[in-house]
Amino acid sequence: MINYKDLGLVNTKVMFEKAMKGGYAIPAFNFNNMEQLQAIVKAAVETKSPVILQVSKGARQYANQTLLRYMAEGAVAYAKELGCQNPEIVLHLDHGDSFETCKSCIDMGFSSVMIDGSHLPYEENVALTKKVVDYAHQFDVTVEGELGVLAGVEDEVSSDHHTYTDPAEVVDFVTKTGCDSLAISIGTSHGAFKFTPEQCHVDPATGRLVPPPLAFDVLDGVMKELPGFPIVLHGSSSVPQEEVEIINANGGALKAAIGIPEEELRKAAKSSVCKINIDSDSRLAMTAAIRKVFADKPAEFDPRKYLGPARDNMEKLYKEKIINVLGSDNKLVD
Ligand SMILES: [Zn+2]
Image 1: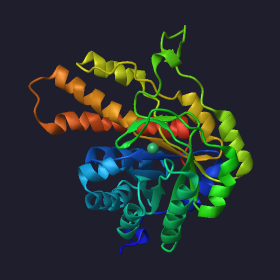
Image 2: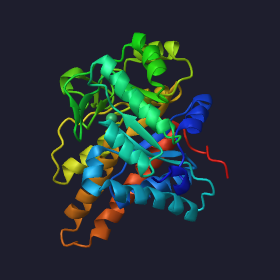
Image 3: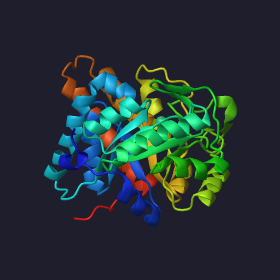
């Protein structure tokens, strides 16, 4: 049994309290390789932002849960080496699918876990979430639950349609389970293809597709029922069209990749939304940079020469999110 505090990590409790008071949201970036982690840590240090490192089931299968845990421990040391005296880094399990998975992460030093029982009947979701909370709270590990179902595909989590969160259920769920934060469904979705072109309209100024707005009425309903309670948005990549265009101009074939407009996320970040999950955008930034090197320099075969630009491009993206979307910059104490 390893406690996250011994690794220099923090849980989400105080982080979310400050985010709630300050009207900003904490970035939750997924990682599964060294370059991504370096980019996240550098971006967080240079902008003085707290950050949540997220590990999905797919990442655990790809990179190994133990290795990722050691990488997160390394992230704390790296942040300090970069000059950050008091980094605030959470290691979070994204979409935990069972009590056993959550327990195994808690036992090896994760400071926060999500138990995703959103696909289960309501009472089963309550029971499973409560079981995880009861275990996690013994070790001061925070727990994110979920009500409502997001559309889209992210690793093994997939659904072909949204089921918005029902504000009438949230008080009962939070009270019965004791969870520390709640992921809700208001129209964000997993992956880079969040909407079909038929669901969008064309912006006459840019010629680009604009998706339907998020269901802020559902968010308002949840906030009315649970004032001051931390809310989480999954599937909140904006799918930057510049990156999609670079990918497609250099041999890629991403058709009609559409994300959530940044204005909508900025608005959400100022509300009770304390954590915003971004994964696809970093995949796009990485892929665009690598494709460009491959197209421009076909003789290049040193991985550092394409993973390096990929890392730089991700770092730029993370900083842009922190400063222009989440507003979590300059929140660390020196
Ligand atoms: Zn998710």
